[in-house]
Amino acid sequence: MEEVKLIVMIEVMPGKRDTQLNAYKRLKPLVEAESGCLKYELFCDAADENKFILIEKWSSQAALDAHDLSEHMVAADALNPTFRAGPAKVIKMASVKA
Image (cartoon, rainbow, N blue to C red; front, side, top):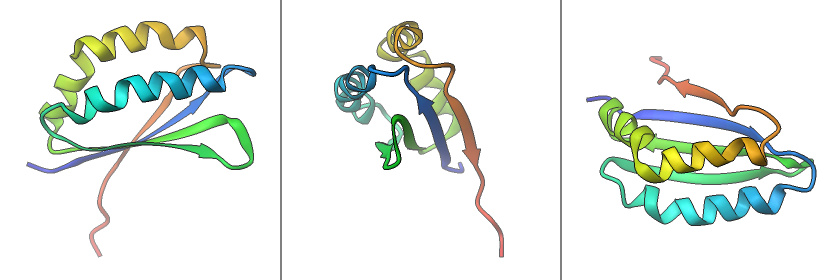
C-alpha cells in the first residue's frame, strides 16, 4: 500500500483565526489516535493570519477514507462553514520518480 500525503489549504473569515486554532487543538489528538494516521500538522501563513496549511499523511487510502467518515470529522465538517471563508482546497501529493 502506498502512503497518502495531503496538503489542505484553509482560509478563515476575518476574526475567526482562534476558532480554527481551537478546532485543530480539539481534533489533533482524535485524528492522531486513528489507525493509519502518520502526520496531522497545522501551519499558519506568516504573511496572512487567516490562511493555514494542514499537512496530512496516512498509511493508505483506506485509512484516509475511514478518517473522512469518522464521527469527529463529520462533526467538524459540519462546523467549518461557520468560520471558514470557503471550502478547503485539498491537494493529494504524489512522489516524483527521479
